[in-house]
Length: 451
Image 1 (cartoon, rainbow, N blue to C red):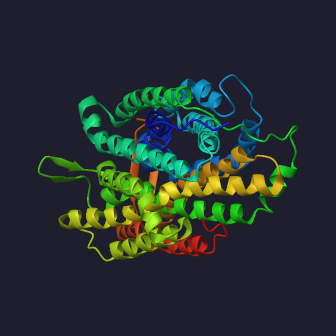
Image 2 (image 1 turned 180 degrees about the horizontal axis):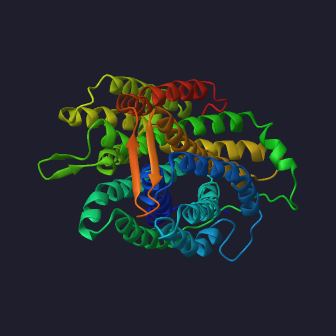
Image 3 (image 1 turned 30 degrees about the vertical axis):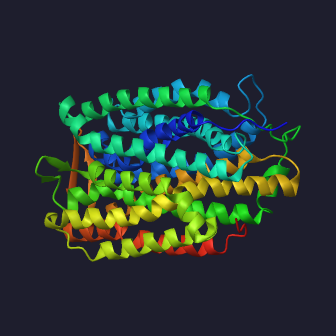
């Protein structure tokens, strides 16, 4: 029996899932959280670094377990969709609480941050791993998978653009302290993310039934390490997310400490979220063009290689721009150039994971789609949080110190070596991502599946 053809409406519904996860929650967590935790919430740089690192160790366990669990789910909504439907509201609620700054002492604040950050990571896993796995069961047509993947990336980057561009204007509209602004924004964006996730679960279809393993077995985990394409894909994904993670997480520090604060051009306020919003709209456009680019280049593998070359060249070029607000549009332009490469490779990443899942089913006889896609989600969180953790640690070493005033409860940030901090920030936005792009390109060139 022939499968029904996916509609444009369903592709848009699928895009809503990553508009919520990639365009709202993960975007704010990647770009705002390092600065929020140290400069608003009041964690020390050491605490912030430790928090994000511990969360990654937590994900090493939860992501693959979630993938295996999702593969065995059976309900009237299918295999993967129920996790989006039932997880949407808790997901949005915990995000709200994570952006709330309680009036507590340093120790209690630390407990609050650790509790809700780890809980947010667990819920992100419970929703996003099944969401990614949906790509493997909505269609068996490779071209349709590429289209779903492109819609997904366009949704994520379009919503990311709206989120980041609106952020400083919403803060100004809300008024009050920065802590109050983040609390209100957390409520608004949390509700929006929950609604989008719910709609994605309700309006998509699972046309293929996974070849289920009857019982839980550690053999599935062992099979991953016998799956050569999966090993390459996981390493590639870690590099891409480190590349994105460094750029997004350091943007706030760059605007603050290298350019002396927000840059006003006419009526446009260019703060760190607006600066990266230009990246989002670029990634949205070139993510949509990724299938055309892939067809022109000849294969997903080579399209990824050329994307890495673009990312590397632009990152190296950025290093030579003077640290001066007068060059803000040059900085925006070169950042946009790097985002062209990121836009091209973003849809390819998930389409190539679907190829790895198909390869695994062929080679080992049972579906491990959820398990394989969970490694992609784990790589995403690893890149975002470890990069944020390293940034906090390296800036602390360079001379940036954050502490909470025991009398007022206010966050105080001091600099012991201004030039060292500026140079470290600049490296974290340019040459370090460039090195990661080189590794990413080499791994993509050696990727075994030649589609």
